[in-house]
Amino acid sequence: MLLSFVILVVVSFAYGWFSGPAVPPTPKVCTVENFGTDAYIMAQFEVKDRLNDPGSARFSHRPDQINVDTETCVFSIRTEFFAKNGFGGRIRSVFVARMMRHEDDSWSTLYLDVQ
Image (tube, rainbow, N blue to C red; front, side, top):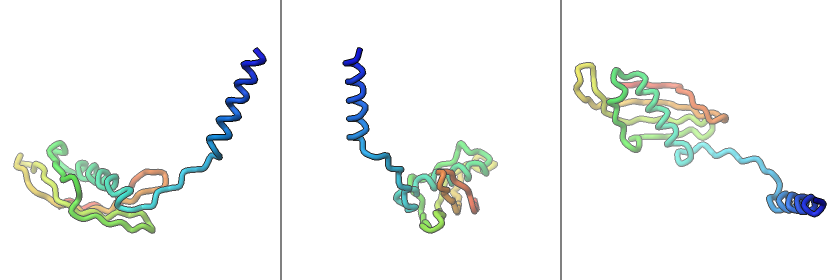
């Protein structure tokens, strides 16, 4: 019993020693490479909320234009998509969005225009 206690203490000490100090993760820089896909997906959800038939919406894999203000973490997105209109015909539309990423990994929509 004493031997198992000693082994437990040694293993615990070794784990703490070799795992190093706990360093908090550094936040990622707001770039198109880091969060552009997330911004585009969140904008798609917002667009679908405004459509008569959200299930018919078809977006390309990448937006036509996407830029980011790295200081404020605001993404500007413009792209075309296809969706059914009120008569059931599939039409090409355009949306422009400004999406802001917050430090707690949440998103907010600053601007959305669906044409």
